[in-house]
Image (tube, rainbow, N blue to C red):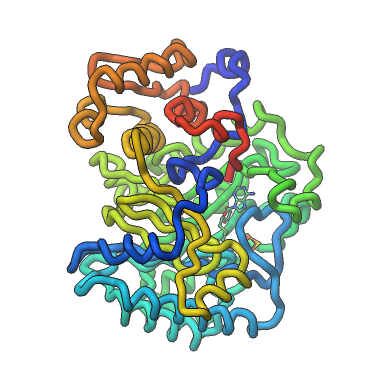
Length: 451
Ligand SMILES: C[S@@+](CC[C@H](N)C(=O)[O-])C[C@H]1O[C@@H](n2cnc3c(N)ncnc32)[C@H](O)[C@@H]1O
Ligand code: SF4
């Protein structure tokens, strides 16, 4: 697919550019958004509207060295129980401001490891959520599951609470790679978790795997992908390992000299991609694969694919409320992020206030550029008419943006009368090309994290 010579000439295999799960990206958030503004935005949700909720649980039994997620290790359940109480207190604050009749489109529990919650705590937290925002028709409730941190009781509690989607962390099945990334997880343990989920009627299973890990080569990733395919996941996220030890200090344990070079990363991605496609999976955006019958694949075919903090989604709710430490919310007015540290988050909520620490108020061209970047990340194409009709861009303004990106990327992109498009051969550059539509300088300077 990729014209390697051209990509190499541009030096863009693997540039440290944002994954654009938001625009502007989180490093641009500022203190303009506080708890008062967050409250105003919650109160402005239309009565009877649909929202989605993301709930962050920042605890893990063990900390994998590769992981860049906001989480902390604990052997005891006590901090998890204490945190679950704070989540319920935060829900009570939300309940007081939420207009009447609002229902849930999507509920996602992520982390960290949400399955660190003991079964009765899961039931309590889920009950508290549904008391404040009941599940709407066709709602989805998904949970990130670490196969090493799950058992029958917790699975029963999740199934009873209404979980209908699960996301399983795999990363790589190779023992030598697992040793290098500090994560011990056998194929058998993973298979058992999946079998138990399916036995409880979980309709859709997602698996996360990584390319670009230490000691990974084409043979090893092919073996891991084939093992994963034997488990028949409905969706797969194939993320590039982001080595950012200055942000995620535990990554200093990773042998940096064993990391694949940028060209090798591309080959690893393509090896895995070819196996998923050969097995009948549809390619979704830059890094997902889904069975053609899966909701994500259907949304992609119908042009309804969207991007949010969890990656790709077919969720149509315009409000996503993030609960828990470090969670990010999105409203039509802007983004709001909770205090990242568990202690600061807890202190704010315990005092009866939202824990909003920063965010971004949409202004100027933000929504236009946000949609252009989202359209590239989802469909590899920006439709000029959509931008002028729905996002307030003028014809000349949008064309000028197309032309600037064309000047930067030349024949790697295509500009026609009505659209800007990234042809298949240039798709490894999608994040770089999207960055040409990003007006915020810091990310242009490449300071934004790749995760
Ligand atoms: C927050 S983790 C939750 C998964 C769950 N705790 C588990 O271990 O199975 C979600 C996903 O983020 C991805 N991730 C974490 N660190 C990453 C990194 N440095 N680069 C790329 N992806 C990463 C992994 O694929 C992981 O499965
Ligand atoms: S991969 Fe999962 S279990 Fe490992 S540190 Fe990250 S969140 Fe925790």
